[in-house]
Image (cartoon, rainbow, N blue to C red; front, top):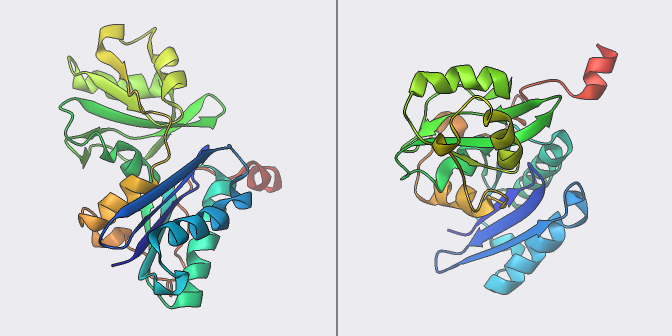
Length: 228
């Protein structure tokens, strides 16, 4: 199966493509300028794989939470390709993808995206299992959740990991907090792996015909709040 996975949910833009024989991956750390490169790197991956875009069988993107603009760009691109090519469209929660590569780690995995206003998009995972809801919380509120897992080691990943670590340090023993060396990476490859290994629930698969299908937002945008 030829599957294209797009990650524009956060600061690092990435895309991955598999044709069943190999996997190709590109990422660009260019923060908010995703719209300038998403189709370009998609074309580059197809060219590298020797695959015409009309031979794609599925397209996937991050569900959210994440950047409002980045999520909209990812969904627009994925849905556009899905409609144009008549292929399935899949979206997977961003935090699941951020935590996926640490599924075998025995402690608590904490993916984090800086959601501004002194808060983070985050959740807790252990052995690949989601332990909490997807949250938009301050470090102080997160500490209350972490204290339920006393004596556990916590590993932080995602673009907000370093900032969150600094804010947790005053309340959690530094020996308990580990920063993933690969915390600031695009996760299109992980998105692709989740699909390939069928480690998704059916309620995470989005039908293009579902009018309610769209990004997962844990809060309203600033523009919506101002109108509000």
